[in-house]
Length: 299
Image (tube, rainbow, N blue to C red):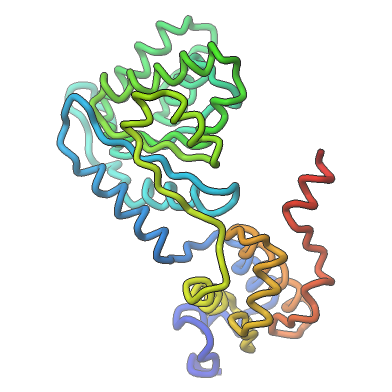
């Protein structure tokens, strides 16, 4: 068939629609970037931070929203867009890393945090080193690789520590920004906002940027249209039709990642069954468990 046989698909996806089922299922399950207004605004806000000149008190961003609502994918896309492996710092011969992303340890532990920084930079980390040695090595590497923006994911983990651990780690975040004179982007759930705002000085330095749960509006329908156009199904599913869109939103509880997982699971089932489109009546039969129910079972 010609590319024009599948007008509901993006041009670059149409050629895949005639591929074998196994190949299409792999494509359906692959990670994909779905642009939408709030995500583009978050990327723009981080771009502004990256170009901010050094000064004593740098601006910071707190990207906050429900779990699995697209925060990590946004910061990962930003990091990938600013890879500069060809650039080197002549002082150390180190590869330049304009944007560094690290994950907050499960508890606010400074040694584990600096270990995460060293691992993200590909630097040797001796696990038995004292905190002072890890900190010194991490700070030297951050400067040598010319890190201009530091992203710290899962910042809400600060609250899993004792009050004293929380206080020390919040002091560390403030010190990092002052010492390196680079912006910080903290990423987490609403608990991250509570953690940052528990420190008056940090609260004044971090501008909150929310990624709220989705509603049944024009932006949501555009998202479903875009998602459907990326899935190599040979027939149109009509995900944006009112009843279908609402059913998906209810099952996913308004969470972007859950919407994508639900649609992906349904698309794989459609290919496997030879149906070639997602049917609304099949949604209840594909084994999708809503996030609230999963948390209840896990608890």
